[in-house]
Length: 159
Image (cartoon, rainbow, N blue to C red; front, side, top):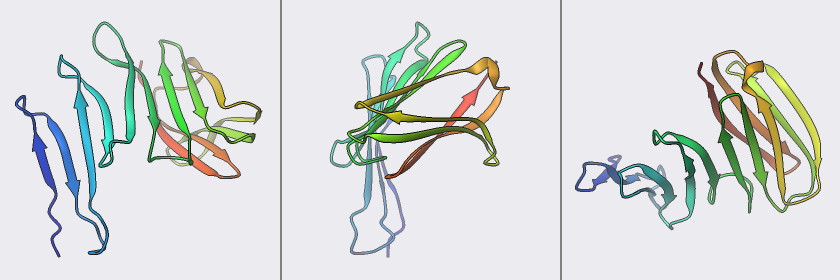
């Protein structure tokens, strides 16, 4: 059994693909592909089939990511999550064909609920706005739960 990963680089020495070995010899290894813009900034992370796992949707003048979209092979079937960053507020967006109760929590790293929101989703896009001023600097989890499952993403608040 070979447990070596394979990494490919472009002419600027940026990682363009990584192949991770499968734990099961009969399974397909996991391949991750990175795409960069003309200025060398990461714009997309995709799986081996080209399905996007993460996409940069916006950058500020300093080329810092201010908006991103998760989707494709991660999360609920046919769903994406989007986080948009701003100076004092951020939006957590959940896009799916699922209709029904959606619970959004911001959790401490220990799993303690800091902010809890329970709403009924009636269209394909669900958005919650949170104010960073209500949270101390630190690392949190954002968890979106439905009867079909849950998605958790890391949130970092810097001041």
